[in-house]
Length: 262
Image 1 (cartoon, rainbow, N blue to C red):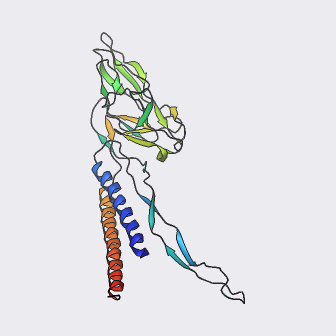
Image 2 (image 1 turned 180 degrees about the vertical axis):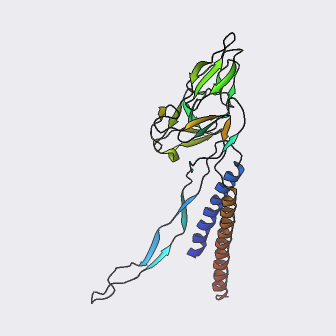
C-alpha cells in the first residue's frame, strides 16, 4: 500500500527536522552561532487522470485530475545569518561584529576560514588567535609588556608600549563578506569556508563600504530564539505522530484485507 511509503517519508522528514531543531537548542549559548531550519518539498506524483486531458470523443476536457503524491523530501537546511544579540564581556580581546562581515582566520593547512566568533586570545608569540590557536588575519602581534590594548570600531589595534604614553597602532583586524552568506560551509569550531555557492570572499575594513563595525568587550550571541524553537519542536513531534498514525491505519487496512482470504 502506497500510504505506508508516503507516511514513512513524512516520518523521516520530521525526524530530520527534530535533529535540526535540537542542534539549534544545543548551540543556544555558542558565540556567533547561526541557526538552521529544515526545508521540504513534495515528491513526484502519480497522475492517474491528468488534469486538462481529453475526457470524451466530443473533446471535453477534465477540469480536475487524480494525482497521488509520493510524500515529502528534504531539500536543504539553510542557515539564517541574522544578527545575534551583543553581550558585554569586558574582555580586551572579545570583539563582536555589528552588521556585515566575518573575521578571517588562517587554519593549520594554510587556507582561510571565517567566523563570527570574536572570543580571541593571545598566544605565546603575542599573536591574536582563536580559541583553537589559529591566527586572525592579517596577523597582529602584541608587543611584550605593552598595556592599554584598545580596538576601535574599524578594527585598528593600538597599545601603549613601555616608556611611552602615546598609544601605538600595531595592526588592523579586517573583515570579509560574501554575496551569499547562506552558501558558506560550516566545518565546526564556529568556522565557515567559502564555496561556489557563497561567492568569492570580499575583504575590507570594518565600518566602511557597507561592512559592520567592531565592538570591543562584546560578543555576539547565537541568533536562536528559544520560544520559536520549542514551538517548532512541538509541531514537528505532532507531525511525526500523525504520520505514524497513518502507518498504523494502513497496516490495519492491509490486515483487514488479508483476513478476507482466510
